[in-house]
Length: 395
Image 1 (cartoon, rainbow, N blue to C red):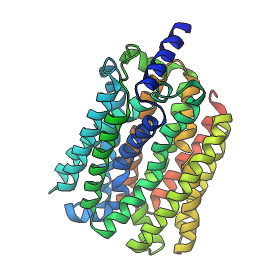
Image 2: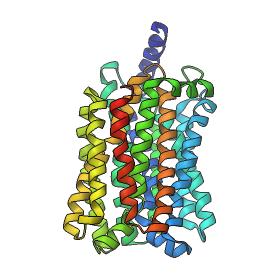
Image 3: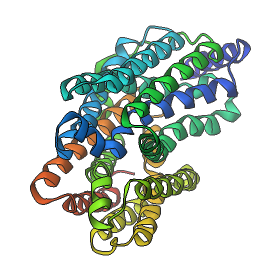
């Protein structure tokens, strides 16, 4: 252990000497923001994407399912596969894959091409997210590792709550293809920032797939992954179809939906930092609040969200609660396996994105079979189950 700490400390010192520090941390946070924004982009654009490509809204939701599934598989596979390579060119290469996927999505003449594009986005997203999570400790002095790690994770959390309204607004101002083109441009800009600001980051130790998978047998890790699965599946079963739900329940038009999603996003950013502060003290206590609040709010959307004003209040509370999910669950997992940060992060990314895929798929089945309003009750039920697991599971 002492040898590991000396190696990590030497790597951090070398990194700072060669141009690391907070600018490099900000570049990594920009990468996590970009990959998750790219993943979430279809949520606010389902209606125009479905119309342009000639598919139902439930089928259009598969654009999120495919990306989540690929991200879930690619994260634990790419982590050991790329484990021996310097992290700087790895991240730059993955950002190039992400840019290519977004450009292909913008060009898509039919749904099959869109699915292929979203596969590329899933590969880039899964790899970047898994690699980036463990880099803060190598870029800043030891006393700054905590805040730097929070900044890297905030890119994921902020993208989860702001990427969708940003894409929705851009799609309304221009069209959905422009939103994907903008995401590709952002990926290329971040690629340049990573190439300029990151120091050389050679691999510190070999990572094997078996070692990553064995972490799932740790009871504390397993509990954290279970909480992630329930919360994220429930959220995305509902949130993937939030646009058609708002159109049906509250009668909101495109411009009003953009505003409502912006309210959700701003509340989510606040929730990210509020929950981050709480999770630093007690991830379990923070999740005991997040689960019931998220479940109750989502459940109330169909019966009481009939006006735009009421819908705005509900979306604000929804965003406030969900904004803390990634920070709280990541804090749980990193505390459960502090000696295997990249492995725990790879599992987290795999479960998180598999849950996104499962939630979007299950929500699509319910939306096509029972109507879009029913997806809210499905999401609420799954989120409510986290209370039992958090209380009874290994903290």
